[in-house]
Length: 242
Image (tube, rainbow, N blue to C red):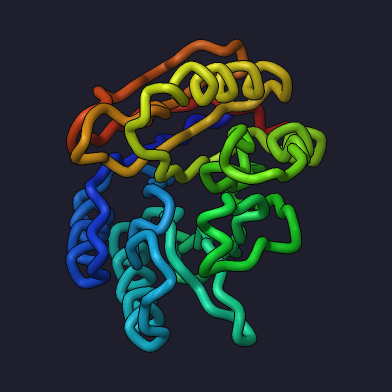
């Protein structure tokens, strides 16, 4: 068994990269954990109108902060590759390297006005832990957010050996989605016998409709943040490393 400390950040996401970067760096620099996860597009803001050079400069600053704080960060960002824009979770390892990326595989219909779907579902191995990343609609393929089939990505990650899914969210506060989002997190954690570690973007209009926290493989909330405002949790997970 290995114990890892995970942290999730529920934070207001500005349209302005500079404001978001300052908050992200603060949380990394003041962290006391092994892994820290941030909301969907928490760096660039939830839009496609970001400057490539500013984003890449910000990535360098985050890499440096992770190395100095000795923490692995999963940061939601916009990214451009070969002329295409993606919604991405970018994994900065605790030595400052980029461990890998996950591009949102099931963008909503509104997302697709500025981004392309990703092409590959990956797992990552680090310090004896196998994990995957999903971004918001990847998890639940919410009805009404586009006529797309559900590829059951959490199940696929479980079959690939993932022990944890780091789930970066920016789902808003429309309460009609709350039961669907919450039941998806619980049932999919149970189905694949893994931990869900989530971070949602705080919403000024009310409580978020998908919780920020940790769900156990038994479908229990081990820690769950209040739904309003900026929040942060830290939790120790015991994982089998055999």
